[in-house]
Image (cartoon, rainbow, N blue to C red; front, side, top):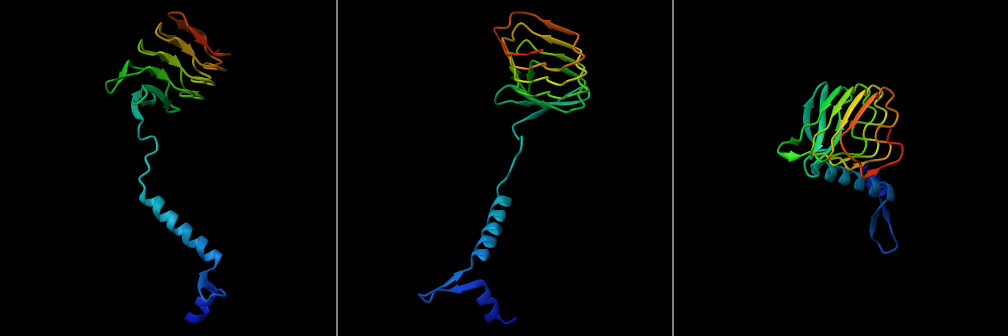
Length: 166
């Protein structure tokens, strides 16, 4: 194929004598450029989260908010400390431990103020949980469908409870 034929396939000649790229070629060039730009931007997924080892795996902590944000599904004993890297643990975030079926026991620190929506929902093997007096808010469905939960120790009054917490 000659250069002239390739040029004719890629370009359109308009009435003013100017050449324009065909739509398909413009789209391909746009995709290539966007891909290149995307590769140049550093992406740090969960870069703010800090890993903290517990029995069976790790829990994840956002030091900007003081919130436990997640856990490895292999965690079976989560003794949450009062501080991680010098930052107080003040909340267990929405769905932080959801469906962690290996989780058996949770100990929460006195620095904790709130437990988020579905924080421990569907933790089928969770059998024991201590909620300190510092917790004033428990989100909706926080312990929903925790089939093995036989003992929850609440050391104080909860000011705000969502629906179906147990």
